[in-house]
Image (cartoon, rainbow, N blue to C red):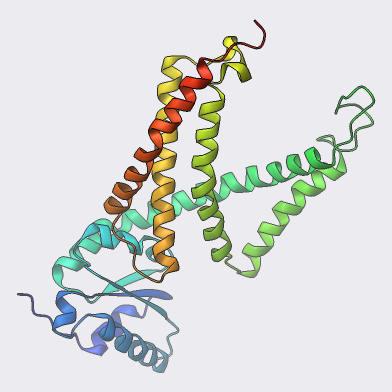
Length: 293
């Protein structure tokens, strides 16, 4: 059995002074039973720390989170996004929970997550404006008398001001959000949820399409090795997409999602139900006649 007791408030305040934003993490299992570090204690301790710090002239933002079990990595991973947004984490769990939190989300985790966010932001800043400009040009492009979309009279060339205006407008729009400090987190989460649904569908459709002899012809029909790699990519996107949709569903009903292993297992079951219909569709497409023969 594990026993725990709260440290003096002054000792905790001394540790929090150097930081601007702190995550106060509790555990709803062992330390909650002895009223030392559960959700109730987190909710009680957070305002006390804020008042004590403010009284000493320190402005420290304290956010809170309570895990079901802080000693298990699959629960600790739920704090990854919050850890990336704070300067420090104060855990009031037992020693095992604190160690698990440090091992799973230590100083390397924050740095690597920050690097990943930087890479994602950089790639989005490059591709999103370009994709928007290409989409608008494809929608508003003028078609010549010969059916061609290119020519000196084309007002949507890459060097034209309309094309560049769309590109620059999207880039400035994103830059404006960053400068004013607005974090469109709900929009980003919604976009990722749509990606979790659309990407597996598009990947599956493309896999079927490139195996349809009547669509691409015998000359461009993919071979066995390419099909294996395509199948693995489709399987991975479907697995991650299904797990992401299940996780979003738990959050919609305001319940904590299960661990990553459980989500991936459930996603694997859903994907397994679709494997045979997709393979049958691919086999049917490859048996169709070549339109050029």
